[in-house]
Length: 375
Image (tube, rainbow, N blue to C red; front, side, top):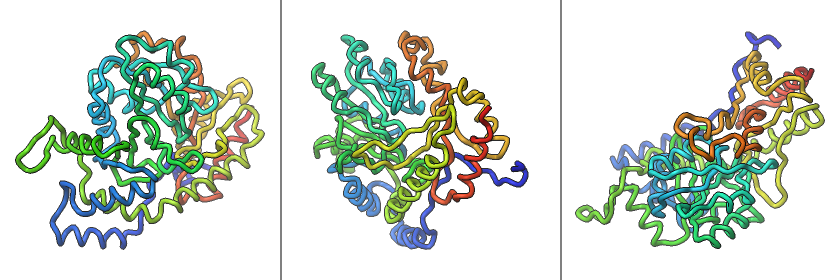
């Protein structure tokens, strides 16, 4: 395969709803001239999305990072928070923006989520919460995490940016913990271009979150607490309403692509991938593989460059670890010796392209490069 003959294949490509359907919503926005501030589409989308996800209370945000930052404020988290280094930087940045010290612990080797067996040893008098991540949409061991949190009086926040639509034995993963946070960025399974949400479990908490994301306004003359501007606008909400009509199709197509990869890559020496977990409805946010350099004959970075040489742009999610970025690398918990599994996985993982519209022949071409790359 000659690179000049191969169109670029990126790790993801945003799913776009039919333009003609979205234009109908835009016409209604133009007629009403309501662009933001809890408009009719915002209200409708919030309800429809909560119904689809199987949650009671959901608050829409302009993006997932603002949702993370606000969630910490909503629970009045201070001091130290136990978290994972194996995530997108927004997870830990949200702590930094709230003047909270992240304490990194290692991940489990099977699905790369935070290791509950490491939590208690990291708890100090300053610990107030656990921020875990459903990595690639694979659920954390929520029962174990929440048992420890309850024993020590800690709050639990789940970064569920990868877990849109994920269920465990028919129940939404978002119903766990004190709060769960979603991202609707263009790279996600479900996108509103930019966007996010906080899921909570009672009306009073939702009212508090809604105050925080809208300057603290109770009504036009009453400010009840110091908030910020993190509202989702009407154009995003309308876009989301159209997207909801097609999300099951998007997930089904991703599932088919993941099945195709697994069938073709099974048995390739030195290459491993994650399988579905029994009882879990996955959303197939990413398709990560890990490269054992000794078995495969090439390092992960060599495989990354090999794919790029054929116009195939995988991503090394997540590399480097958050703990190795300058802001955090001097923390005691950032020592690689404290994070052996995360350090190993960060050096081995690469996410292959997966998105609606990725053709079977393109998957076959990607697989062909990987199979031929074995030394």
